[in-house]
Image (spheres, rainbow, N blue to C red):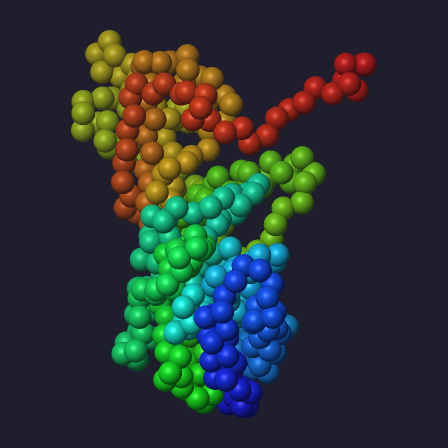
Length: 379
């Protein structure tokens, strides 16, 4: 597998860095030139090699995207040009991709494997917290362990030297691994091409991890995303279709999670002296507990996520509000789901019990409504 010559990328990178020293939010002559290099010249040079990049990423060449941004209207302090798969990263704020990030002071440029700073909730995009970005970096790096051991010039943190840009802090927090190029020791095109190819191999590993991981930190739990999108589809709304949020749950997956979490909850309460009856097939809750004259009505939820959000039906909420204080919510989170066997096998997880369980309105999010229309009123 070979690359043809990647133009004069080294000269383009150097020229952009030199123009960084003349940065202005206004569209000055220097910024106009920088814009041409970021949005046109560098992307065109990188597009010469989309066929080879596609081969590494195991996708058709038409699915590889290259784009640059330097600010619409006001010019950004840190411009960038990125290589991405639009199906996985439709914008620079979502998904994982490779990006050339130019330091504000013009003395270095990074080629970074980075993540977007927002997530799709099923209805809109929400900004990720710095803690979520760090958790996702911690998820990604072990996937790359074998490839990272091939080099000793990779860096885990980047410094874009920005004084005005808040976005630059997000870039730094979201960077998984990077190669740093100094303005005065810029390598030639041959090295730059080799580096881009290596980083593309890393991106491919991340994509494989996305496709095989039941849950990726910071993503909306799969059952929540499923419920939100199902409600939207039932209401006749189109939903976004892009990869990269872990695999979605099917009926056997959900059954495995349910059986495992109910089993853990049963053992938890039996250890505390309760007689446990599984009533999930007949009632709007899962377990009925008896201990002498005491009764406890338990709702059980199992998830591969961290358990910050779970799905409740209207019937479950109404019934549990009737039972307070003789009720409980058990969440078994961080369950491991093995899809390599049939049926899938669930194991592990952390059990969290809330009892009594008082359901506050502010803790509920409406997924959909049933609306009584004028048509029905007229009948």
